[in-house]
Image (cartoon, rainbow, N blue to C red; front, side, top):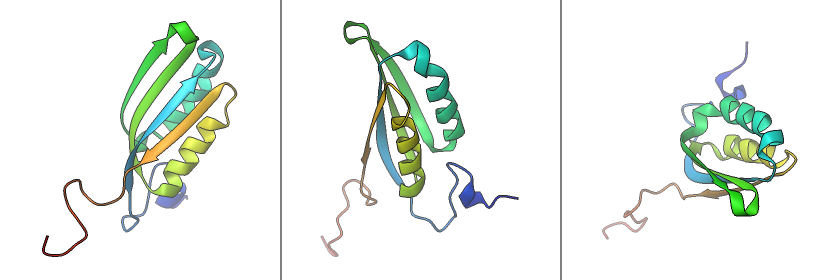
Amino acid sequence: MKDDADIPGRHPVEAETRMGILALAVKNRTEAAEAVNRLISEYGELVIGRIGVPYRQKSLSVIAMIVEGTTDALGAFSGKLGMLPAVKSKMVLFDSTAPGKTDIQGV
């Protein structure tokens, strides 16, 4: 039986998670859609929300996902998507501090 940490998107309770945005540009939607959707489903526990927009003037489909997970799980997810033909992926991760809080004590 697999440990929770071995399952895509799952992480040990003590592992630090990060939130971010994963953006995809898909050049040939009809050929890439099945593989892209399969990976998004496989790593579905990392995905908080998703929006897809066709950019017809450029013959692209653009997908933006809000994600949260360990840096290892997010990197594996983004890397597998980016290895698909006609798919480019970019990830932006936020630091682990809450917005509006500082690391300086007393401030």
